[in-house]
Length: 208
Length: 419
Figure: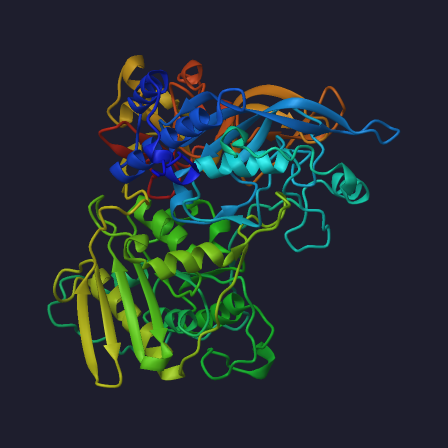
């Protein structure tokens, strides 16, 4: 019997890009700025992001904008339920689909950054109701106590998906890392039966 | 809580020692070609860390009568009399920077001594532009990397002093920061250092809290003479550099091991795969106040002319980010802004017309934190608008043209003004 290696998150670099994504990568790469190691890294991260889109399928994830000129900046649409501010009677509103904005600066390659530093929820533009999504300042998404040096962009997408799907959630308002939306933390503490909003894995298509 | 813009506090003493009548023991150094006293009186040093090593560096700097001595340390003295330069029990629990600064001022009343009791990351990169040299002694790796990057971009020599108690070793790392080809602090980090740094910083989830994180540092485990040795050799290097004594300085590491009495000097070189920006900015001065100049003026001062060329230029203005969208902290309403925002003065005191909330902040995705590509960041329509009208102070504009990286600043007159 021959085992066929299936493409996975650990081998994003080996996923052959579609001709469309290859063209896209070449287009944005023409604008690359900075010193060689940073340019190479941005190109590699952009390629992995496009490979992740292919792997996940465009019904799960779409890279709607990509810019690697200075910081790597990407807007990514995700098919994921998004919890919105509950109705006065406590009924949770859920909308389908989110756009996350990722700004990946060079400094992340040498310094850990706060968990809320790199990703924000662009759409829905307001009203997302999670303990780890700030109600103010552009709905920054907190993906952990700190983001380790060199965390890959594709991992930020997965962490964001887990956050929005309610698969990873921080409810403890007394934790030193804190939460970004105290009301939401209280709501979810009292309504843990509603979690997760979706238990579908990000790469559902690849899951046996 | 809003992290407010920090500042240095000048140390004054009520009863300064009389400089008149002090005995002058400055030697006639061999090979000296400059007026040593005048050069040292004109030297401004920043000392980062005022503990076991940094505190003694400040004392030596004062005894050398440096003209400007600035000290940074966010911490207070603990009851560690073994290594820290504590002069009396009452100093325990008090700010290291203030205690050491006061002592330095007492030794050298003619020096301008200023202290800042906060993290160095809280200062703007342009706040460091006034120093001739920076001496640092901290076991906080993120501070090392941050300080190294700022000194590098501004072309300021940086000397790190450190000790390793168990092996009785003192170490200096000297970064001259002369050009893009030199090493940076991160170039020499081992995998252990990188992992330790990655794991050792914890941030609060509250974006309004201290943005510099809580760093797990380890207290100095050493002996007092070793700390003194590291401090003394750092200040000796400063003297050598400023007075032009001995062989030309170079990027290197100097170690002294007290077990065998051996000293080793090893060159520091750039690591080709280092991910940190190694750009050292060239300096270009323009006449008149910079806030009355435009981005086009700055681009042209850096050699980029014509809209097509300028569209490929990236700007970094003061310590500002450029926000083309502001967002209301309460209701999420967004507003077009297209102006600079001082990152230390957020949120802006502008009222949301939807909910009445007073406090709009730059949208994290629709703003540029540092380098703003002119063609993409929405700057092109503002090329001919004075910086002041775009809410920039005009302390300095970094212009990256692709061929050159230039810091444009106002030419100062002898009285310090720009007009």
